[in-house]
Every structure is written in structure tokens, then in C-alpha cells.
Image 1 (cartoon, rainbow, N blue to C red):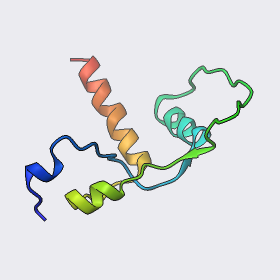
Image 2 (image 1 turned 90 degrees about the vertical axis):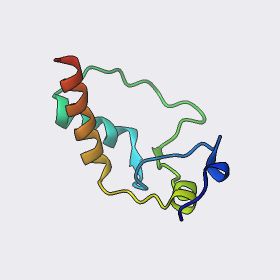
Image 3 (image 1 turned 120 degrees about the horizontal axis):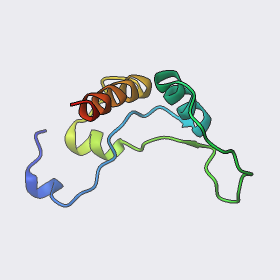
Image 4 (image 1 turned 135 degrees about the vertical axis):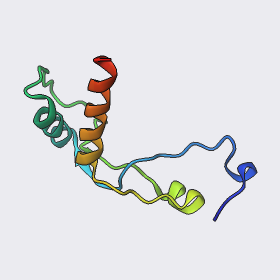
Length: 88
């Protein structure tokens, strides 16, 4: 590090944590921040993902990226940011 712009120009990077989480766990975090939300559960379909993890290997390698907070804290801060933005 540092890498030069010509190395990363045009590249796409996943930025997040490397925590694995199910959709249900993500919804539970959102509900803990916003209160109950309305959604409809539908039957699983072939190919539906059970859990998700951001692959941040490329960002770590090329950018020296290292997450500094949990997914929960990141979502909390995003909700706070959105509230400030909407209530200006």
C-alpha cells in the first residue's frame, strides 16, 4: 500500500464486514432499530440464498480495507444518517 489509481481504476469492491448473516437476522437487526416492520414471508424458491457474506478479500488485498464495526453498528449508523437526512 498505497496502490496507484491505475491499479484500482474501474474495479468494483465489496465494502462491508465479513460477518455471515441470514435474511432473518438482518430483518431482526432492522426491527431492533426501527421497531416492527411489515413484510410477507413467501415460500422458499430454488436458488434462494440462506445467508450472505460480503466477500471483502479484494478490498483487503488492494486497498488495505479492514472493517472497523459490526454489521449491526453499521446498520445503526445508516439508520441514524437516513433519519438526519430526512428530517433536515
